Image 1 (cartoon, each protein chain N blue to C red):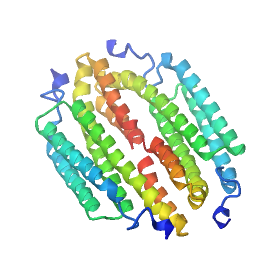
Image 2: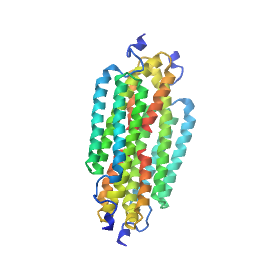
Image 3: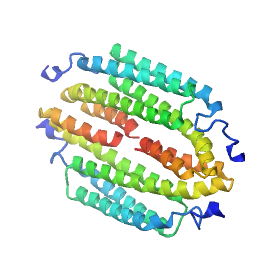
Length: 100
Length: 100
Length: 100
Length: 100
C-alpha cells in the first residue's frame, strides 16, 4: 500500500507534470510551424538548422521530464511491488534510444 | 559563372528540396500534436517516450537534408568564389550543435 | 534483508560484469592506440573518423552495461530501503549526460 | 595550383594538427586506463559513468578537429578541382555517424 502512495494511477504521466508538458509541446509545435515558414520564405539554411537544433533540445527536455516522472513514479512503484527488474529493463531500453 | 551553376540564389534552401522538407515538417507537426494527445489521454510514459524518440529521428533527417543541400549548394559556391573558409567554419559550428 | 540480496556490496560495479567490462575497456584502449597510429601514418581522415565513431559506440556500450548493473543493483536497493528518490535523481543526471 | 596551396599532401590529416591530436589521444588512452582501474578498485558506478562521459567529450573534440582539418583541406581542394560532390557526400556520411 505505502509503496503505491506516490502514484494513484500507476504507469501514467505524473498528474502534476501534465500542464507543463502540454505547454512545452504546444510551444514545440509552434516552433516546427516556424521552421516550415522559414523554408517557405527561403530563409538561410544555417538559421533554419540552428532553429531545428533548438527544437531538438526542447524535445529532449520534454523526454527528460517524462523520464523523471516515470522513474520516480512507475519504476519506483514496480520495484517496491517486487516487479522491479522488468520495469528497469524497459526504462533502460528507452534510455538507450535517447543516448543512441 | 560556372561555379554558380548549382545554385541560382545562393545561401537558400535548394528549390528541389522544398516540397519534401515541407511535407516532412507537416508530418512532424502532426506527430508533436499526437504526443500532446497521448499526454492528455494518460497514455503510458514509455510509449510517449518512444514516440518522442521517433520525432527526434525525423527532425534529424530534416536537418541532414538541409545540411546536404547547404553543403552542395552554398558551401561549394563559396569555396569556388574563394570565400570557402568562412562558409566551412559556419558549417562546422552547425554540425557541432548536432553532434554535441 | 531480501531487498539487499542482489548486491552484497551496494553502490559498486556488479561483480559478474567486471571481467567483461575490463575486456571491453582493454579493447577500447587498443582502438585508441590504433587511432594514434593512423594519425602518425598519415591515414585518410575519413577512415580515422570512422574509427573514432566505432570507439564512441564501444564506449556507449560500456556505459550502458554499467548503467544497467547500477540500476538493477544500487538503485533498486536504495528504493527498497526507502532512499529511492535521491538514487533516482542521481541516475537521471547521469542519463542526461549521455542523452545530452 | 593555388587551389592546392592549403594541403601539399591531399586527403591526409593536416600536418599542423598532428602534435595536438597525438597529445589528445595519449590523454584519452590514459583516461581509458583510469576507467579500467576504477572498475578493478570497485569504485562507485556513477563516478565511472561520469568519467566515461568525459572521455566521450574528449573523443568528440578529436573528431571535430579532424573534421575541421578535413573540410578546410581535402574537401575544399576537391571542390576547387571540380570533384566536390563526391567529397561532400563522403563528408556528410561521416557527419551523420556522429550526429546519429
